[in-house]
Image 1 (cartoon, helix red, strand yellow):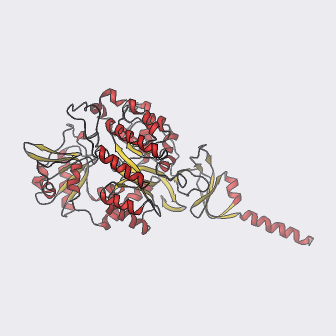
Image 2: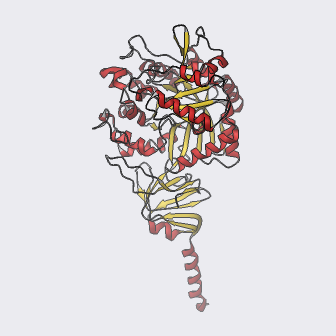
Length: 541
Ligand SMILES: [Zn+2]
């Protein structure tokens, strides 16, 4: 027997060296686990789409034998980033529509629409992205020129924030809108007895619900383009902030066809059709698609004077803005959602709307302390109301790039005193302990490094404003990264699966192309590779 001993020893050494078999090992990396200790590790073993272990280089390489090894060359690895408030469907449509982002004048808008219509002869023109605050006058536009140029096809041009739209006469006729038409939670601009074509908030829906749509196959291709754009930055999850039933069905089909890999947390608009669907289906977890929440529009936007303020607008003393969903409807939707276990995420920009929602959450909190109901934007909050965020358990979902975009006119709309409670991310975080960060794309660009720039430096890509906008409300780098990883996971009840790189969680992560660092001067980063549930879904190679 003695003579066999060395052989046995050698055999057992070989099997030991071989190690436990896994699918993939990432090593020689700087793995930002985003766990409670915020530890940084060197290597990670992955099997069946999940993380088996994260730890020091030698420990992981000695212990595991993988089908594939990736030497990350000391690159930074983060949990896949989440955009906690985006609009994939709107963006997909925008990519097919006339792009009005950055128009410097109304004449430029007209030229772009004309060019588009020549290149895309179809029965309608849809556009998005104009912003009259860039035209020097800040005067909202009227439709005479569009009606003259396009007498026979409907034209619908959304403002950048989606809360105002300009339509031609054909579109007004199609929707049956006259100067006498009444709409609650919106308004139809009328001058000298005729509609000017400008519609605010709920009035837009009168046109959009009758407006033709792009073919499904074009929307599907466009959605995949959006997915590709998000992946290039390392974004692996989107909280889709409001869809109709037909859009939900399209997203589901693409998930079934294995064409959309992102973690999609889809909020349903609280329409009668969606409510009936939710009551019938309950909470849905279908592959990488989750539906268990409603999106409700509390008010309009600050840019178009549609956000509901306690005191009138500083630059329009006759206006307080408006509620787009009545207080009674908010209450009705909340009780219905609570009865079927759905989360409610309410868009609230003005201080009056935020207070209304916070009061509603007092009641919800009594029934369920861990409700995680969200206030989307939480943009202007009365200084006396901040502590209600802590007492109600409201989860703020905010978009730092809005702060640095709106800083051009925010003080004009709100005045100095009210500005103290606006875009107040640090104050909100101090109340709640967590924040979910997003971009609201396509209102803002999808690039998450612009969000980091806006949150940490409080400036835009051009470094404006100098010194930062309300710099006391800046987040730290770590808070910002948590706001894009583990906190949005909490905000969508997914923290046991995603949001950190820890044993047992899904192997959804990004290896960044460039070293992660924050400088005062904006510098974008990109993904070198992106893995979702253990599968490579993007590579820059
Ligand atoms: Zn939005």
